[in-house]
Length: 265
Ligand SMILES: C[S@@+](CC[C@H](N)C(=O)[O-])C[C@H]1O[C@@H](n2cnc3c(N)ncnc32)[C@H](O)[C@@H]1O
Image (cartoon, rainbow, N blue to C red; front, side):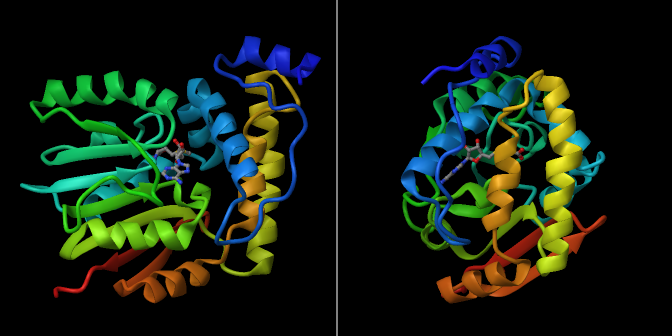
């Protein structure tokens, strides 16, 4: 179904799909229905041209610091790492000194990430990244393959978070760690403030940048509404079998860094 605002949006933001009106509700904090997930991926793809710009604005510049914090928590030498949901390569481009595999379900995201990440890695003398199209819920890797797994601003979009975490645990080597970053929601009041921030502050900026009211960043708010609390995912990681699970809400209270380790044997 085409509409005037969708046509304008495609002119302003290349890759913008025709999303029409927002569809039915996302199910809950664990799952996203298939129709909604397909719609979500189209909208994420539509953000590619303005992704880093809006991300920096949305996090008042804190995103680079959070990315650094993730890098510091992962092995930095002689290691093989996996990033699940690499998007356009915003994190991967600055990972150095290790072998890196970047996975994303979107071919468009991988296309955007590949030249960006590999040219930076080439300049530094790092090995080329292996880009793999796939989903967290069905990781196309052998058991015990990675010395570390990370996922930044993607976990909230997994359509089956419990299955995805189970897969991450499977592909990690014994004793290795997962690091996940996504929005913080400590309780209902904090969640309401987060929602307000995304809807008003980020929404207004995205509307200006994309030039249309029905912009793809609306999905940021939509997925945040059904996203669980920081504690929900600590419990989920423990249920799935991770050990030493921690969650740190980082300044200024907008994001959480979760960590968990695979048992030694
Ligand atoms: C907002 S981007 C994050 C990009 C990047 N990681 C960063 O640091 O900015 C979220 C990415 O997660 C991917 N994604 C969504 N659902 C996924 C799933 N089930 N498994 C793996 N990746 C998924 C999307 O395609 C998208 O590229």
